[in-house]
Length: 308
Image (cartoon, rainbow, N blue to C red):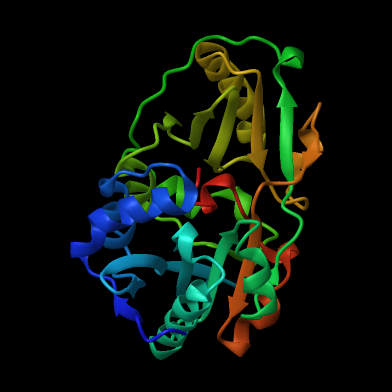
């Protein structure tokens, strides 16, 4: 690589530059507050993040944000592959490879146990072929046609999650039969949903249930659902979702749910589709390699991908 290229540790002073680089990389805009939220507000601590400079211009970026997995009820800290950015004029020059190599080496130094993420079409081949990631496939994506659902009475929705959900999370039945899942506690939910600077979420919360929705175009996405009783979850989830979808003028409801999950048996009018991203993982701790490399061990939901 040309000596004019230089890798630097990311600091907060580059936030504004990241907004420019994002547009130059993807032809879309992300506000500065989004990068501050993702890189500085994480409830588990600081990120591993690097920029690539060419002379005085920032032309590349890559980061791992800390995340925790529960594997057989034991907590393991690792990195979440946050975002790859390369200026279009500098593509094909190995910028992402250099930044990723630097970040992965730092992750090993910090004793991270794994790296997990959702890659796009561009970065996916590099993650698999160069860095030895494993694709966890296939994500079970369900699409439910609303014309076949029954109307229901009105439900109340809020924009924030209360701090009284600990009981629901501790006794959530969704994790039954799964040995690997993202740790989700009160502080995680406050960071992930209450503090998110861009997305608008619709929260249904009762003493025993927590459902989290988001509208995307004409689709109502079920990002999360928690409860202490399967029958209660299954009887309410689509009824509540159907009610909200009509208010928001959505044509269908969608969610990610493992194929082994018992809710699949209760679903009607579903269609299995491929998601637009690739679920990938790289074990750094040999002790957990077999567990996290098999998607059948995972409980996952839409909110595990940070685009939702």
